[in-house]
Image 1 (tube, one colour):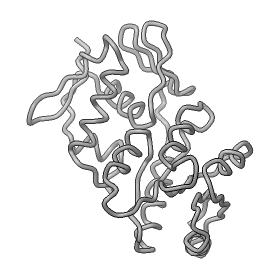
Image 2 (cartoon, rainbow, N blue to C red; image 1 turned 120 degrees about the vertical axis):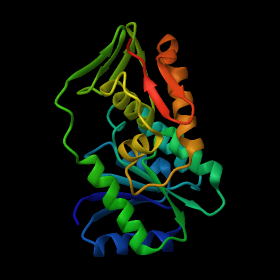
Image 3 (cartoon, helix red, strand yellow; image 1 turned 180 degrees about the horizontal axis):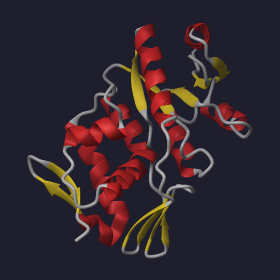
Length: 227
């Protein structure tokens, strides 16, 4: 394994153990004890992946994710959140904000490495050959990762953006829920039906008048109607 990982963890012992685990697996690791410190460090060369605890002093890991996704420079940075058991709402908030995955603490070392490898593998897949996707006044610039609706720029969290790209690439087709999840999240990630529904709901709202094109076919899946 290879790659550069930025670890954000306020617990010094947990940070030391996690860093050692990642370094033994072949990764280069930089670290910070807070989200604020991490943001200061990320002004230079970006890592290949950011691994952040949710419960941090000051700015939370979820807020850190939100800040990173709001900036064009870091919007596509792969990000995994670490969360304690029973923090289901934190998991949902993190995924809604654009985290690529989450890991529950305490974690099994092999699980952490497998999820890191999975997210990095998905991030390194070859980009689509198209430069732009469009339906009427709804446009997605794939190179710039910019979305506009009737000339108005839209800021979408990472997963909503990826969902929109996927729907536009398969406009008019019925897409089953499991196929959407496997493509956008990867088959190694398990998410609930409710989590996907939340992302779809927020995408519809963000698209304005184009949201009605994103249809739910009860018991079957979803379709972006381009008729």
